[in-house]
Length: 356
Image (cartoon, rainbow, N blue to C red):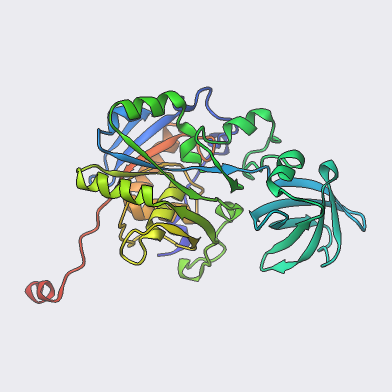
């Protein structure tokens, strides 16, 4: 397995720059990972594709206004992209400037915000906002929504509303869990009315989700860390769905990674932690049966994840079909509903002897 196995040709015109007029008006490509069948649908058809007793697990993270601009106290323009909020005054952030800011220097940012550079932590800077008692309030006042790098227009008020799920509650993400952008309040009400259950998980999406892989051998890739929290209520909801014969449907790769991370020891457990889970073909999923997701960047960790879930050949055919039929790609684009490609269980010693 190599990085180029997860590449595909994408005409730039298919990269969605703006969302659909209505959230549920997006297209939906339904892929059955077991037989490879494809069906073109609309996202508003989702209630026809689920049943009473199914459980949708949704990421309730809220995108913060993580991008700030200004200048260094020594002069020179600077741009800050907050990666993670550490406490009421400190953050980890990417800092772009003509010269690397030194520890002890200050960044003079929009709306009078001042950040002191405390030092480096790997690729990030640790910053402390001076005279700050609530960093989320400061970012709301001084920052802008950090749209992905492939969206070329500056963030505006419309993006502030649409680059956010309707159920976003827990502030901390610097990128949206984009599969959830297709749900509106009417869709959620319809699903509940027909007996589909909803449960919540929080994973604060980091800017690392957009970082390209720079190594040809995936085994050499270091996965970025993201923080998640899983409640006992969601663990119980998953157990109840399983007991009733329902399917666990992850809304987005972020929900899937959080659930699979929480079950890494063999049993799904509530709690919070950082995850660096890197899912590649051959991974055996323990929690999730179906996945709702957008289309992903070529040569990315998320292309590997969906290839693990649906089967690499199935994903290749699905993406060729999506390009040929002009689906819209990435954060503001269309969606997929994927049925898991179930791997055969590993053989035990007796089975190996019989086959020999």
